[in-house]
Length: 117
Length: 111
Image (cartoon, rainbow over all chains, first blue to last red):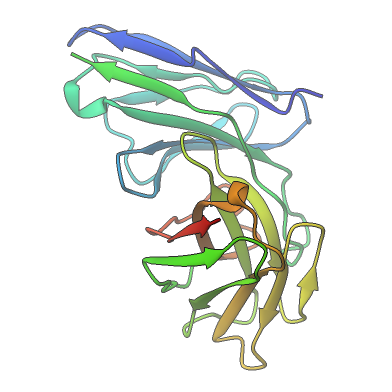
């Protein structure tokens, strides 16, 4: 059981380049999400998915695309990288809640450090 | 989800209990209190959560006031490895895909 796995761990991009951050989980979680964390700040939600084939925008979605073709994978695409996207990116997953009153733990990956120059 | 207020920072002596307060005065009846921590450069780590009753696990204890407007996370015997940013989060269970992280409390455990 590897939990939530993110790749790559470090990446340097030039402005305008595109790339994909990979996220995979082996816990059969329905919910997956992407957050970014800038220095000295809390995490901000970029995109999330409540199941395969379903995605939606979070707090800061501009400049990012996601897809969820399988339960296990939730890649984050940077379409045209900008210096403002220099950040640490965290993928997270959890079980869905069916009864509305049970708290579920959210599991995070170890992060992907992205620098755009 | 309800907003939370935490102190910016606090120090704790190694081996002593660390008591981290969190105010969530606008919490509603179906919102849980969650605590996560983030050790430098790592992904956030779940600590504990609760709804009404006090909770304890191998990592910490969570004390929730009777009116649920505030809570305290207790690390019973702080170690140097407990140095981290601690986040108190209040959320509705159905919003599992969303977590609103504030600035948290930076806890420094000193030898």
